[in-house]
Image (cartoon, rainbow, N blue to C red; front, top):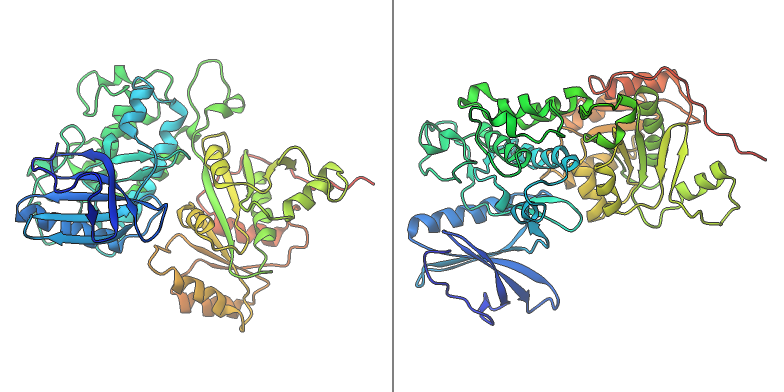
Length: 497
């Protein structure tokens, strides 16, 4: 419970706008309420109240400044900040995230959450940690634990409570304030050194161990391996062990490095007796997402998404191509051809197959989340040229974001304009694909964007078919990502007359 009595009760109004409805939770430093917006009827926010000495006031003010500067789909968005010096209270108004904490979710499963959720969960946490750690001034979260992770009804994980996060300062040897949760905080948070990105990775290891032992352990001690659930992928053990090394230099050094190790380890296949690799798809827990976004109508996003999907299918198993738009028509027309359906007649299934690629037409975001927990090795999202919040968020969180735009001199501003409009987001993972662009256009765009991942796509009339020139470009784009495990050549299903 918060040490000081709250200044708020049911019906209290904060900032002449936010009416308190109920308490959501409380801790030693703060209390969180749900509030309704008096200016936007029906809109609810979370209001975080802190009442403490000047040191805590400074922490909360720092939290507000930090959250204002952050923009990531797995972080709460702060919308208002108030201080009331006479009472010693400060208030943060932020997104109300519907759902339950991971702590409560685990209680519902008596500590044993479904094993197929653990690696996708780790990848979601690593996604937001990578964003925080790669900021120009890196942000260290420092309190990763089940109570600070919210699980939404769509099975998305979001970090909450930035009360003890801090910006990394390279000139300091130690943290000024030692904070964190016992059992999940890295050793250096107790005064042996300054916390950095590796401290959050230690906490991730503690969290994974906690999940893998049914909530029994979060620190690596003698014999703990025997308590790790037997049905879990055994390749997780050395990864967790390395995350939990006492000395930071012995751990993984970045979130990106952990992601790479998770993806390489045993191809994410569970080591269950009696199951071959080909029959273990139900245990496959690692899915990489390629998101294809067109900068304007007619830029070739769908054509490129199809070509990429069939290229990946020729290289590896389990590829899904998802049309992330509930009213798009391209995949419906393709399904008519593949299944011989009369024009305009809707199929009862939104999934169909072309040469080993599973096509999902007119798909919602909730469907994508469920596919991420399935057996696909790659999911390719065809986002079209839509830049609404839902599709833009999927593009920003993808493992391999692809921007498709014209290389024509008079259209190149479409691409640079998109990059500038999203400059607050990290763009180091982005890849730019320019159909039919001359080499000069590629060089100019690389220079203008200060980005080397710009590719000219050759003429490719049938994206379902293999094309040597296109494969050369895609080999470069996906270099080091995939291993060629398929030699069979695919051919597009021809329409039966």
